[in-house]
View 1 (cartoon, rainbow, N blue to C red):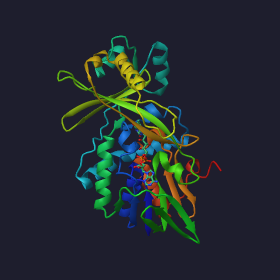
View 2: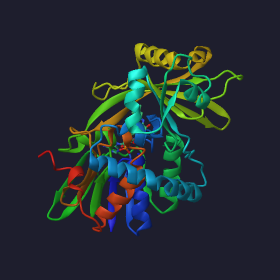
View 3: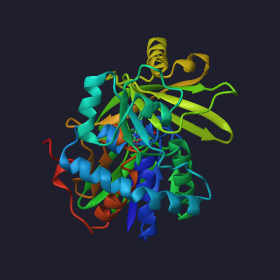
Length: 352
Ligand SMILES: Cc1cc2nc3c(=O)[nH]c(=O)nc-3n(C[C@H](O)[C@H](O)[C@H](O)COP(=O)(O)OP(=O)(O)OC[C@H]3O[C@@H](n4cnc5c(N)ncnc54)[C@H](O)[C@@H]3O)c2cc1C
């Protein structure tokens, strides 16, 4: 079977890798370089506790399933690619702003008081009343993940065509193909995994939601916090790679089309919120500031399945595309190979 995938993000690369392992011939068309979209911009949290508070059952079940796949997925990917991806179940501390919020958090799991929170993260501000301690929450280095997936895809025999954008996707008489500026790519199945840009390729209700993030670098005397920390409208993710320590702070949510310009007001707001939780961050250096586009569907749930004959879509993962990556890779590969049916909650045609 010949499959063409549009987009080399975590979704397209993961699906392509699984399809190759199942014996398909796979080409990925990428308009830029692989894994430089939202996959690069993300914070890498596998935030089943923090992100799924208001999630409905299909999304929660799918996310928990994906979370359970992550240890095996990470180990296999590291082994195949020879590259570390920093998967760790380092926990997440969801801080309460006051006693009432702390009380409300009790229904969601194990709560610690202020002293307990500072035992987990000694640098926290003294007036924090406590928070929810999600000891099993995991994270991954999403940039290393993108690189490792690219290596794994190529090692499995995949054909990756960078700087070749899909312009139109057409189908006639049972045949389907993708037109690019350089030619026509015929396939038995086409998977649109173009992230926030998927809606530009047809009648796919996915829109971009911009997120700006910053990275802070500690002075030599300061250590990174151990777990991910959520509070006061931000999250903070410790990231250590190649001897470099960074605390990623995110993220804004802006529906401003495909604009990825950076705002000093957002930068300062992220930093101020982070400093309200960890006052010593005022001594840390601003090391980076970037923006990315999350792919959002009208109901916030992913679009995973057949769009029209031979043409599939894997998108709309919104804030959880890294978390959902292993489950999406398995599900979409199985669907393309005709081994599984669509989940109605994620049916791309549910809005029509
Ligand atoms: C600031 C921020 C923080 C985030 N934090 C997290 C987090 O902590 N945890 C989590 O789970 N998720 C997080 N997300 C969400 C997550 O990053 C996305 O859901 C996920 O990366 C989407 O993956 P994707 O492969 O669908 O899209 P992308 O990674 O954007 O990849 C799509 C690819 O398609 C290519 N493309 C687009 N159009 C075309 C075309 N016409 N032809 C060829 N190629 C094309 C693009 O160049 C791109 O490489 C975050 C997102 C942002 C922006």
